Length: 262
Image 1 (cartoon, rainbow, N blue to C red):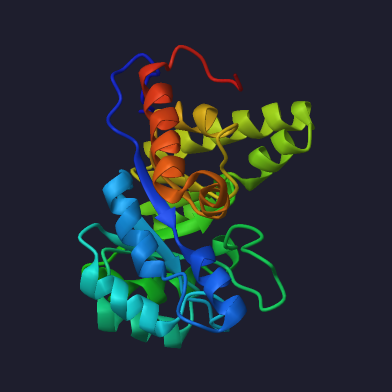
Image 2 (spheres, one colour):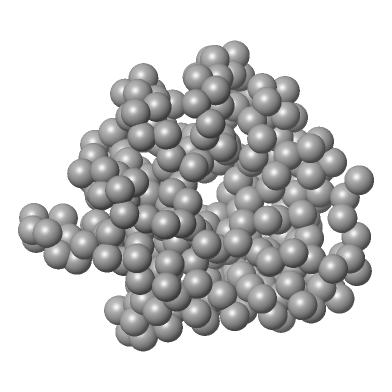
């Protein structure tokens, strides 16, 4: 059954996505800023894990970044990847703590939506089997859609990461009726995924203004946040940005009396 909001909640994990530290580095073609340094600073500031997306076109994170992260991190690495043979072999070579299967298109600026798992269920089931056998925690990045969540449960993926971009975008654009509808959908689908035995994470577009309503949802165990925190680090420093987000998440966990945007 879904967790009741009045139940004491465990600590909500924060994963920092360091992709866009690499984006800044690659803009000049040098070695600075170093994504590994950002990851180590994040660990010290209270991040529970590091996320890095090795895209097929290597537009930000590179193979050498993954090598360095695996050798030097003390916290878990969440390796975001498309469902390709190349990425599967890289993941099997490194066996990171977690792999998150995401859709990927060359022309997109960032991941635009959840994986259409329901349409590709058999292939993804075969794709994740060796990753699970190797000991990687497999998650699937999905829209807040019942059919997609049911597919994840059928193929044995232990974790789903729900795409909260529609909620975050609606809030930032002032479309408050849509925002509230998206939050209700997120609440219902997080509870549904939990009832199916899946661990529930959330990510994409989370900011200081949108994190609390998401963090209040009792079924969600982990948030993965990247672009916003790397952007805030320009103004306040990475340590300060992560600590502020961590505090907002903890405050939300202590105050679960209502679901809504403060």
